[in-house]
Amino acid sequence: MGIYDRDYERSYDTGSGWRDGGGGGVGGGFASWSANSKLIAAMVGVFLLQVLLERPLNGQLTDQLSLRADWWREPWRLYSVATYAMLHSTQTLYHLLFNGIALFFFGRVIEMRVGGREYLAFFFAAAIFAGLAWSGVETIAAQGRPQALLLGASGGIAGVLVLFALNYPHVQVYLMGVLPVPAWLMAVLFIAQDMFGAVGRSGNVAYTAHLGGALFGFLYYRFGWRVSNWLPGWLGGGASAPASLKSLLKRKPKLRVHREDDDAPGADPAEGRVDEILRKIQAEGQASLTRDEQRILEQASRRYQQRRR
Figure (cartoon, rainbow, N blue to C red):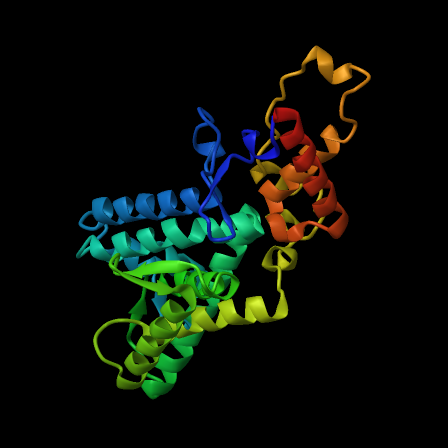
């Protein structure tokens, strides 16, 4: 059985130099979903709560979780620099739909590269950075009396899009699902549009939040950050956080079928090592592998291919 035939590494090759995972084993339930799928599902769930509780609570749920430009006047509202990213406008489905589509196509690729835990940490860090950038600009522009509210995942998604373009600049994407362009051009057009919008301050689009998220994505790539290492142990941060939330959220290893020929004299002694490396890719992304681990994986892949001939 080849390396990529294993249930936790099953994926398809797009032909663009990166592998796109399906995100979850068969019959594993919600726990087996990819982090990106869980993030989208959570956004849909929050949106439904917003709609259902809009009238009973007179819009208080959305109001309390949205980010106010002058949140710093009420420091206890600091939580809103993160919660706003899970909200969407209840006046139309397009806000949630477009953000969900962007996450579906680009977020899952980034997750495969950096791992599920790091992907979620990156998304929320980009959203927080975007929210702080927006509130700062709004406070200055409104001369200290800002009244605006911010909600939506666009700031975090801007970081995801920029990170995708930096890692895969020549991958072809389709603007509006029609026009084929390389990913780097998509990012340039995206940033240019937001810069013009931010200068003109037209409409109700938070252009400065988009630019803040995009800037975070660039800094993350430029300096090789790993946001999950910044988190406290109880949130699953660091490389080895014992008895933390990391151990509760991490997917458990899949059961492996034992065959009698596994114990035969000719069995591959590196089989267990390969399984460990593949589980590391699932948890932390392919970029986390050392040179030695990459070499072991390549050698094992060649051996498996020879067996199948």
